[in-house]
Image 1 (cartoon, rainbow over the protein chains, first blue to last red):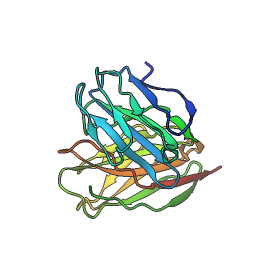
Image 2 (image 1 turned 30 degrees about the vertical axis):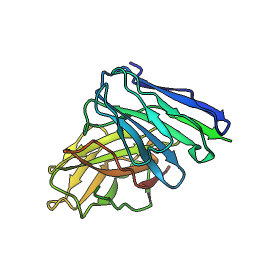
Image 3 (image 1 turned 120 degrees about the horizontal axis):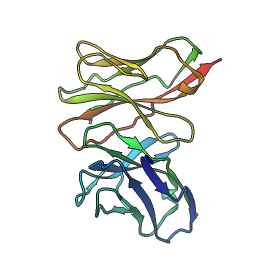
Length: 112
Length: 111
């Protein structure tokens, strides 16, 4: 199985533009997460979803939005990108909240 | 969220055991101890987790102190592929499943 896929692999985005990072899992996991990783800061949780139809805010939600229309997909949208959103973004999923998480390969985003 | 303290870096020789320590003095009764690792240019990878008892799986062993204020991840025979950043994380079973990633321990394995 593919596990978790993310697209695109990398992207250069002009400041002020919008973009959606895609995340799809084929494990029928209920919970999904978005993290960003910046040098020296480790991974920080942006948004999460306990189950399809519900979402919640993590540590650093400002400037990002998510939706969870179905079990498999959990897109992350930047409505108006800023340079501080330059980062590597990881999507993850777990069978339920509090179970071990499985991570995707990441999307490297550069906002210029 | 309860925090963890890990050494910034550790080194080992190939084929030797590695003991990666983690302190979590403010751990609560419902906190699970999770370990993840991140290889260069990859997403984090689940390693092992436990609550009170020591745990073993194909990747590693987790030794948890009796008072649960510290734990140790044990790699029985380090290989070059084990070179990674190892994160010790407390996950509260009663809350939202948020993983708080600190800076972790950078493990270097020498041939």
